[in-house]
Amino acid sequence: MTVQSQLQKAKRASRELVDLSPERCQQVLMSLADAIANSQDSILSANKKDLSRMETSNPRYDRLMLTAERLVGIACDLRNIASLKSPLGEILESRILDNGLKLEKVAVPIGVIGIVYEARPNVTFDVFSICFKAGNSCVLKGGSDAADSNRVIVEIIQKVLKENNCSVDAIQLLPPDRSAVEELLFAVDYVDVVIPRGSKALIDFVRNHSKVPVIETGAGVVHLYVDKSADQKSCKEIILNAKTRRVSVCNALDTLLVHRDQIANLPGMLAPLADKEVVLFADGLSYKVLKGSYPQELLEDEERYGVEFLDYKMSVRSVDGIEMALEHIAQHSSRHSEAIVSQDSEAIERFLHFVDAAVVYANASTAFTDGSQFGLGAEIGISTQKLPPRGPMALREIMTYKWKVRGDGQVRPA
Image 1 (cartoon, rainbow, N blue to C red):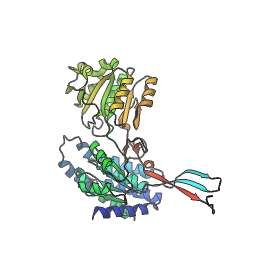
Image 2: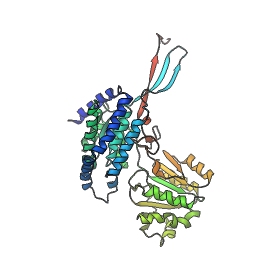
Image 3: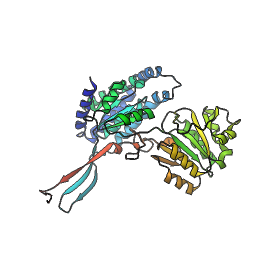
């Protein structure tokens, strides 16, 4: 099957999905959740083949890996999405004009959504479930690293669709070769929007080459500022969770900014990171305080700012106060997730007000930047662009709207 024919099928399927009842959609997603458990062995076997082609030291290895526990989590997300109220047909605005015309602004699907992503086979489930619930068909271009996993997952999804008398063309998996990306990005007649998920290089490539409109999901260069009033226990727990819960995800902590009044407490704050063998790249003052007390690799390096590590690595910088922290974040942030730990309400509100990011935290880990954690069921990506949608994108973020106008013979005066 050619890429062109796959795109055509996805377009036709999108027209069929508009007529799918919420009850039928829920049934499909619940059946898919059950199918994950029934197909666990085949999914993990395919994933094992993908993992065998990647070095365990590769930061993307954890993203690529599926486990029985992770599959349970994916199935749970599917059931959550199935239970959500469908936004299709929701009347967003309604009014009657002076001339008697009745206007309704109604939520409708975007149509066909293309996703370009790397070694994240869980994305295959997430994207399909959210797109399907919102009445969109999806065209997936996964990376070659996850080719076997994606193939098996899509086969399972299409089997469930067929068993429930729904079009199997609602999901299309393009070949893993690079030429398929170019065809997708030029498919203005078939694809309504493209969403890239992956490295900065991938996102830049899609944005710079696509003729189809793009929703950017940026790389996560994540900062946490420790204010002079911060509680030590909270600092230690939040830093550990934000950095090491899963180092390969986009909401993981990359740079720690520490108020100079807190520098003496730095060894205690970062002690749990040593147990995880986190490599630190410190500025002069931080290095001086940590040297001799931090048992893992410590490098005096001020050139590691603005880096998304996706690994057990983190940069540390001392700052004079919140204004210096805000300036650093403005210069190096990817506008994904930023956090402050403080007991000073004025400092907290200033940080929340001035930091330009999709999600801004006070006294909480950045690990919560996730559609499931936000109660959205799952996510199709984290948008870091200024135009909406922004932040975790779930059902409502992949909808558009149209105006329905009802009259009784009105004509516009000359």
